[in-house]
Image (cartoon, rainbow, N blue to C red; front, side, top):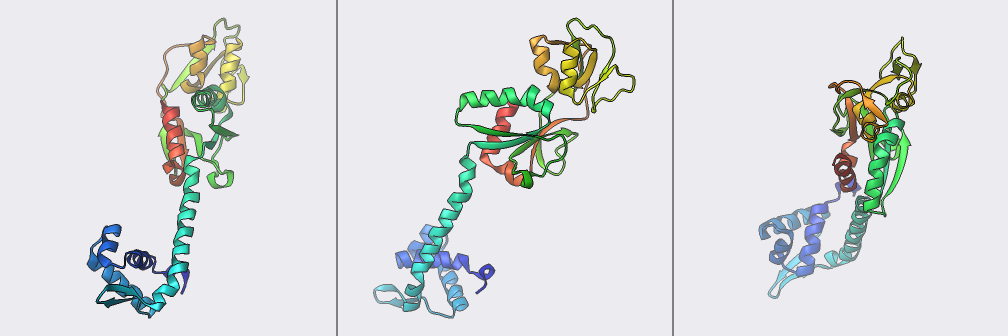
Length: 261
């Protein structure tokens, strides 16, 4: 019999009925009716071409055919249980792999992971730099941080932010703009690789930079840079994203909740 055609429901009913030697008690265990147990057993007998139970004055008795198969059947169910436990073990793992742009990791993610690790010293993180779309399967990722107007093809949750903000150093020695790939400016006095470096350049007095408020948040709070005007709403922002299987994992949901707190 092909593996895809195994009558797993019927075999599960057989196991319960054989242990209790009673369709009624098997039905109680399986939360179905005794009639449903009887139907499953008859269907299984038809599939196997063998009689599994006989009714006697003392109740149900297993046939030799049923007894011959019960040992391997119960070993198989134990293997199923071990397989389920092995697959669930990752749910309780405290190791997570996260991909994020370098500046997001430095300016926002790393301090939050440090807080999480202080609360639970057993947590372990693997951080990957990823500015573009990442292959979750190839990189064995649990979660990624992505810039855009939504989570794309993955599940996701927006990281709360006030949009874009222009920042400058406390005592700027240069009035020019600092450009980066997300905010190109052909007249800029300086161009840097990402928004985090743009904030650092502004803090050094090399001009002003318009960056995601999330990237500048810690430097604004510490006074390393100051805001020039009010933050402006943006149709884009940073998202915590993962494919649905990873998104459903308890450890990933707990991390998303902690990062969003």
